[in-house]
Amino acid sequence: MQIREFDAPHGKLVDVAADPLGWLVVYHDGATGDLVLHQLAFDGADRVPIVRLPCGAGNAYPRVYVWGDATYLAWRDGVDNGRLLNITTGLSTDLGLVHGNDPIAFGSWFCAYQENATFSIALRALSAPAEPVRFGQVGRGTGLSFVETSGHVVLVDDVRTVVAGLVNPRWAGACVVGENATGENRNIARLNDGREANLWVGLESFTPRIAERAA
Image (cartoon, rainbow, N blue to C red; front, side, top):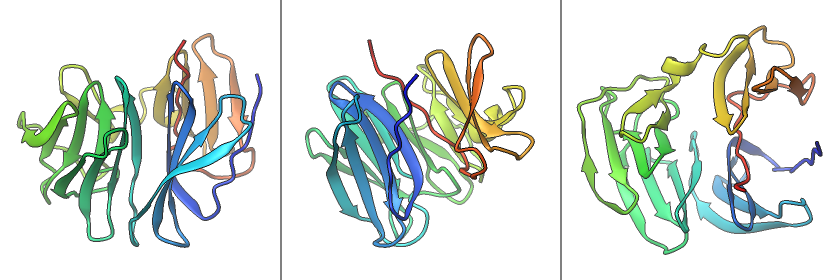
């Protein structure tokens, strides 16, 4: 295993994905208020900022997602509006006000978000994002984790403690990453065979994210 570090000055609320060209890392720049999406080659050789968008203050909770031949970015802007951007085509969709922590999530072919103060969940099909779809599901203030193929949205609270010893897990292939439930060495990556490693020993990073490279 090779570990390479990516320095995101003033970066917070990071998300990651992978496309055919490399790793995608998005973060909210706490110094400028910009939302920044970087492309990293799989060998770590280069670092190219491919998108920089004004976002404003507050917590953007950015999400990056690759589906089909397109890359999507979603976030909450400085006035609490949700935004969905197809980076490949440039199509931008206003989601309206979004609420709670982690108010937006991707999964399958959907972008889901909590659209009002009662945390009602709406979805946009990535192939046709103009109109929302609603199944009557209600979220929570702690937010959304991911969307299943059925369109059911899994909440952060639904999976918070489903992996022994980890809090707020995220999955990619045969690996899961999460916060250490004991609060020490907060980031743990664990393979299905039980092997695990502490990430950034002695440092704190809440709700770590993970992505895998497609074969």
